[in-house]
Every structure is written in structure tokens, then in C-alpha cells.
Picture (spheres, rainbow over the protein chains, first blue to last red):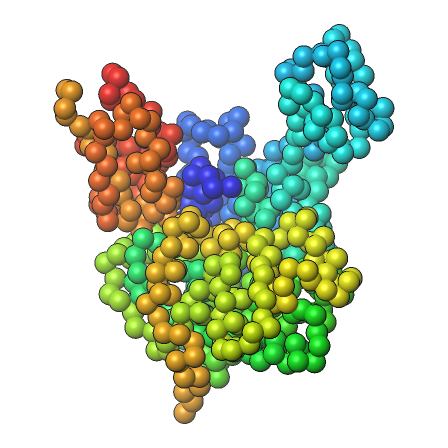
Length: 489
Length: 86
């Protein structure tokens, strides 16, 4: 949900937490909800400031990287802040639901509105296979016990008077991993969740939070470690300045060096091109890309039969982090991107230590009072290609494989542009049949539009897509760039 | 009054942008037609309004010099309407 109000609240909490860390005021974090909603102040969104404070307290728990689910409501934020300061690694589950913010939307159901004209034809009554619709007082009424939410009545109503009430998080989830509990609050089933972040973006109350690792990262910096930032290709255009200025702002925030993950994307493109060629030559019907972390989670948890068709190539984040760790074995690596699922991926591989999302990056700049437009231009040590820099936009990955393959006429690229219930069904079918009717190189992006549509973006995807394409346009072709090796002593 | 335009100044400095000004980038195209040629829109890198303790009130915009804090598209359009229609 592209909403100014929820955006502002979430980011203000992050800014205040970072502030508290920098000013060594973590012992006063319990005051945060009171500072944001002071005595005699207004409650702009909810019934009263007490409710708003309760929500802010829970948002702060998520901002400290902890679970709201296990909160007993009695524990002070100071205690949680201390836990965040003491822990040696981030928590395993990466999302948490701020139940105080979750409104407990009415259950998803089909509903006859007052627009019903009580017509004589009554197509809704005759269409319903379950006998769930009756006419009462001249209007159609749905019997909730009989209704199966099939929506047939909606389609036949000549007045479009029947609507489906949705629960935005449930509706957005491609795998049915979020549901309301008996209290009406959303609960994530982590056995099913693929960390795509669709619910994070969909909730109009911003009740689903990523558990931030920002405190962990700041602790590493404070301990004097060499902390290296790896910025995802989608970083371009997140702020209205050049990517070089954003990188310099990261240096001013305490990072030692900044690498473009686009350089790892080049490795992904080259490796995937070889993989594709090999698979086609041995007679495979199709191959899917493997760079989207949420898609990889989907395959592992829901469509294991797709595994043989998914490229074995590792992701741009993996190759970049591996490169950085080979160059600086003692450094701490932080992936900076728009994506929830990258947090899961980082837990599963050995080279990426932490993940920071773009919202947290923005909050860091705000807390440190860094005006990015006034920063110098940072010079990246390694050059990335046009194709690698285009990875964040749908179609970019397939195109990079095509270019890296040079001449391979049997390549038919296609894109699954966004994971939803329909595309997940398609993927299951393709895996079952062992064939994809749309093409033989299938690029898969969990977010519609690509990483530029990730749930933690600072700028809208139309603008960032243009900026990325302009930046990529100035870059060299992948085939004209040498393969880079880490510099080791 | 007929020819005089009111001045809408937007701030796209880091603080304002992160705190919500990104949503104001396309405001010029959202201003209703009856007000469109009565408003001049100007974008700034920073209006310097965030450099005090109230920076949490970002994003800031100025309408004929009058500061609107925690600006949203809705707030700005209402202010324009008030300014022009009185």
C-alpha cells in the first residue's frame, strides 16, 4: 500500500530507534511511543492516543528486530532494547504482525450491497449452486453458512450490486500463508510463508513488519568492524540523486566500502547462460531463473517438483557477498535492497551477514542528518554491466542471459511478472507437465515489475524503472566487460 | 488576483523524501483542472525546514510561504483550494 500516513509512522519509529542507538539512549526507548504521541496530543488515526501508543510500542519491537507475537505487553521497551543490544545474531523468522495495528478486517466474504434492486429476473438466486441466496424484503440476502464465496452471483448481477469483501493481506498472499485467527488478527504461518512481502505491501494499516537488523548492523560498526554495503540494482533512483551519491551517503553513515550487487548479477547472467545452454543441449524443455529469493522459497516449500527446472545458478547477492568476503575475509557484509525474502536467503548462505532494506537505509540517513544531494560522487571499485544493472526490472534477467549467450537461436524468453495465486498455479502445471508453453527460459519475479516493486522501496516503481534504465543505458555490455576477480593480499 | 499564481514549493531533500515527499512527486498532474493554471510548482533540494528538532514533521512544503508540515497530497490540495477559493 503506497500510503503516506503508514509510511511516515513506520519510518519515524526507525529514525527514532537509530537516533537512540547513536546517542546512546537505548535505555530510554520506552519513551518512544510517548514522544510520538505526547500527553494531551492528538490521535490522528485511531480512537485515542493510548491505542496509538500501544501500536507504536509494537512497531518499535519490530524495529528492534524482535517478534510482537511473543510480547506479553508487560515487558518494557527498554528490556527489548537491551535484548537487541545483547543478541549476537538476528532472529530466524523475519516478519512479525503488529496485532494492535491489525484492525481485524471483516472476514473475506461475498456481500450484497444496498445497490441491489430486487429485480424480477434474480439471476443471483438461480445461479447460486449452493442455494445460499434468498430474497428478503425485496432484496437478495446471502446465507453465510451456505455461501462458498465462489463469486458467481457477483458475475451475473446486472447492477454489479454484489461485491467481495477482501482481507488485503490474505488476498495478496500467493500461498495462503496469512490468515485471521479467532480474534480477527492476522497470523502468519511460517511453514508456508515464502517471505515475498506481498502482505507487508498490501495491509492498509501497515500491520505486517519486517524485523529490522539495523541495530545489529550499527553494533558491528560501533565495534570497529569493516562493514561493507552491497547495494541491490534497485537502489538506483530510490532517492532523487545519483547512485554514486547514495553510495557516498552510505560511507558517511559508517560503511567502509560499497559494492554494486549488479557486479554479482553479471556473474549470475554468465553462469545462467552456460547452465541454460547445457540444459537445452541435453534436451530439457525449459529452465527458470533462480535469482528471486521469494521464488526460491516458493519452490522449496510449495513446488519442489520445479527444482529440476530451476537453474542451479546462485543469486547476484550470493556472488557479490562471496567476492567481498574473498577480498576482505574479516569484513561484515550487508545487503541493502527492497526485498523481504533476501533476509531468508542471507540466513541460508554463508557470505551475507545482514540485510538492510531501503526504508531502513533512508531512516539511517535521516537520523544521521545526511543530505544525500550534497554528498560527493562515490566511485565503485568494480564496474557492472548494462545487463547486470537492469536485473531489478522485469525482463532484465532473461535479457541478460540472452545477451550473455550471444548467439543461441533456440532461446525463447518469457516472464512470470509477479507471484500470485494464478501464476503459482501456472508454475505448478508447468512442473507437472514438464513443459512451459510460453517459452524455454522463464524469468520469475515475485514482485510485479521486478525488484523495483519490492515492499521496502522509497520511490515509486515507474520512476525507479526509468532511472535504472537510464543508468544501465550508460553502462557497457556484459560481453565487453572482463570477469573480475577479488583482490587478495 | 486573476493572473497571479500561488507558489507551491516542494522539498525533495533526503529527510522530506524519505518521510513521504516521494509521494508528492507527481502532484502537479493531480491538481484539479480549475486550479491548475493558478498554481506554480517549484521543487527544491532542501527548504532547510528539517534542520531543527521538528524534523519528524517532514515532509514540508510551502504554499505562498506558508509551511505545511507532514504534507500529503490530500493536505496540499485542500490548502490550495482554501487559498484560491478563500
